[in-house]
Length: 132
Image (tube, rainbow, N blue to C red; front, side, top):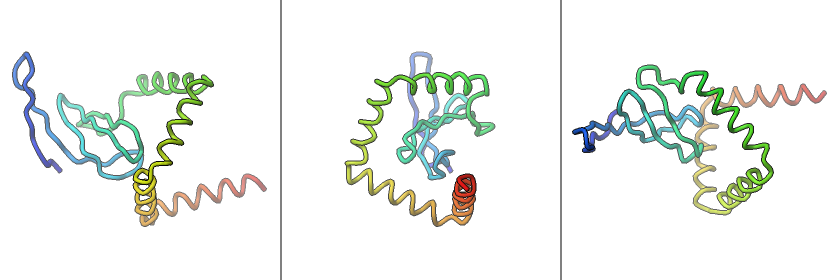
């Protein structure tokens, strides 16, 4: 679903950037992204994460890269300073009425999807049965 094609001039010549609409793998909402050099890059404000994958496969980076990033994030979250900083940032986000409204709208939209409902109900049942 290409919506707009823009051109960016670099020192080597003209590089073609294509603005496209993609589906965020984390939240399922449409996100505007830029496609160039066989990659799609964008940012999902709802999931608050970057979207980056190969155009041909529409999958994330290779498993080795993903494992490296995962290990780095796990290590970072072990740091009490980082945890405190991120907690304060999230608390600030949730105090913003605009952010709260956006999250509320996104959640309502997700719950309209029968597939999402089934997935969440199954997860809830698993957690409930685990406690027994």
